[in-house]
Image (tube, rainbow, N blue to C red; front, top):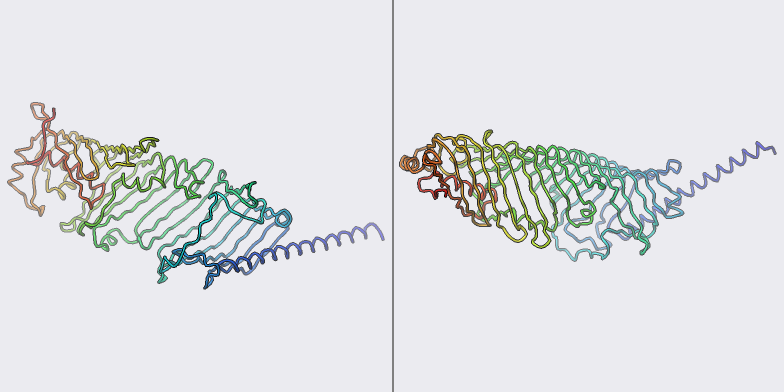
Length: 541
């Protein structure tokens, strides 16, 4: 037999051995997977199935088609007894590339370069009774670890998902919430083996990065939609960026406001760009709260609408800012929150003939700074500047010396020059005072407040002031009080003799109204006391 014939026979034999090896490996892997599925289905309250599994040893890939994980009608494990039924999970395809088959079979090492999921749908249904039995016991251990007995090493590359949807339904199959995601990609997942416990791995997020696009969260019970454009995160830099964030009602704000029994704040928010710096993703993953350095919102637009033809809910007790901070102090840690060039439109449908009161605020810059102190808790300072009514500059500063244990805060502010008529859209509906003429040169104020009362001083420097006090229907002039107002209030402040009058900020908070109303009414009390004939004012020393 010649050398060529021997070589040909050797090649054929090698091909046969290789083919048999591939068949053996495929069958071995299939048997391993099938055994794991049988074990999973026997021990868990779920059934795991798939239509097809395609292996390619040459391409180092595996592809599942039409995976389903569905709950059994009767739980065999009996350990899922929380407020939700078991999830139904459907996956069109799951593809793994860069899969080292021999490493799995021989060395028990799981190495994957790419995992791609296309078309995943998860459905949850809420239970009618949330107290059907004891909850699943929580195993003690390090929250950063997971136990995988049969593996010695895990290396994961890129993980991506296309077309993800999640639906939460009620007992009657009505949708309570839904979430849709077009694209999701995460890279840099590392699991490090712990030497002291066999099969124990810790998750390392140092090199983690992720990207999401075109998300939408629908909250049926809240009647709002949350949408996000592109989201990118880099764990090494602790930088999270989001574009085109919006939180808007599903109905028009007027229609939604009319549905409520009481006057209820309707919000619309649109934020083109959000940047979060110093985000500790590992603490977030392992339920240690949100820890970050700063949040910056660029060019956000906010619309606030209230239908004041509806009554107040007098049983409601809105919390002050200090109270809200105490509620989240263990779960949300930050150094600063910044708004750049924001706009805010506050609109009220008033009680009188359904007229709209609109207060536009433009070029709004706001900085909220929180300074942690080891002995005395923390301090919170807020500074804001904006333009109101298109021509009135406003600066405001708030200081909370110890929001961790006290509701006390200090406020101060100032305005630029404008005509007194600029205040009519706000003061006329709430106080019945209408400014006929007058030039405001400057207004300054400062005060101290707690959870129930505000006190302070407000000084207006002006010329040629003339005011009218209207009766309750705001259409008929109260001639007597208007006469007294114009006689009792100086047309100019300071007077010709140089003496300056100061109005008192003196207001008791209405307990069923919020922090914004409390602050506005406190400042308004100083304006009213400055111009009302029986107002509380004094000469500046």
